[in-house]
Amino acid sequence: MSLLTAAHGLAQRACGWLGALPSQCAVCRAWPARALCEACVTRFAQPAPRCRTCALRVPPGVTQCGECLRHPPPLSLCLAACDYDWPWNDCIARFKFEGEAGWAAPLALLMRGMPLARQALDEAQRVLPMPLFRARLQARGFNQSLALARQLAPDRCDAALLLRLRDTPAQSGLRRAQRLHNLRGAFALAPLRAAEVRGQRLLLVDDVMTTGASLFSAAQVLRDAGAAQVTALVLARTA
Image 1: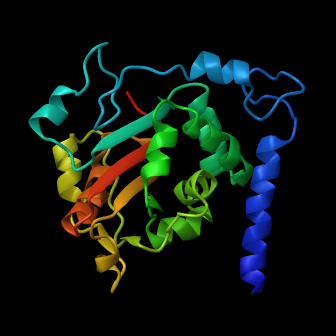
Image 2 (image 1 turned 60 degrees about the vertical axis):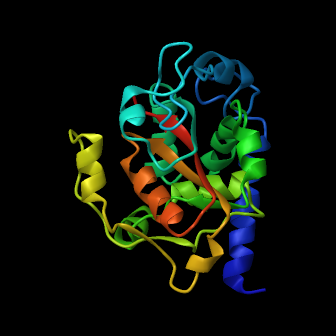
């Protein structure tokens, strides 16, 4: 076993310990509790009606939003554990930008506990984290989507199949179609591995979903390579 492999194993176990050990709840400050106590998860992460292909909130009884009906995305199913709102935006910021990798365990537990998430994970033959462009990965120090995917499905997580070839400029304020246009060519499969995708049931993992353009672009690459099904599981969805 290499030193790098051993270090990674220790880091993974540490993330699990941090998520399981009693501590103060980061939301309500209850003690003793886990990083996210059950009461806060129940209160702030209530299941909500969402579009089945982009996870946007929809009225009760509606299964797809108008945009997805007009322009069906390449995802068979898209699940979001919560809205990108307080308290989850604060928790995600600590995890994503402040280097608190121990958040991977409790946030992945939040994702796994949502309706249909366990079934989607069980059905997936491979679980693929959304990749980061190398410059952003170097600046941040880790890929938060990979940390979540390893917690969700350590035995089927494949971080080397889907690649991010280029970064894109800030896309805030752009519509979904404009974002999709900007993301053309941003994702690709690892050289010589395209055949592994054919006929596979794949699940993409991401932390925050805005318009869905990045997930859709990545999913389209997988569908074009012959994937039988591509679903997505995200931690938080913006309004």
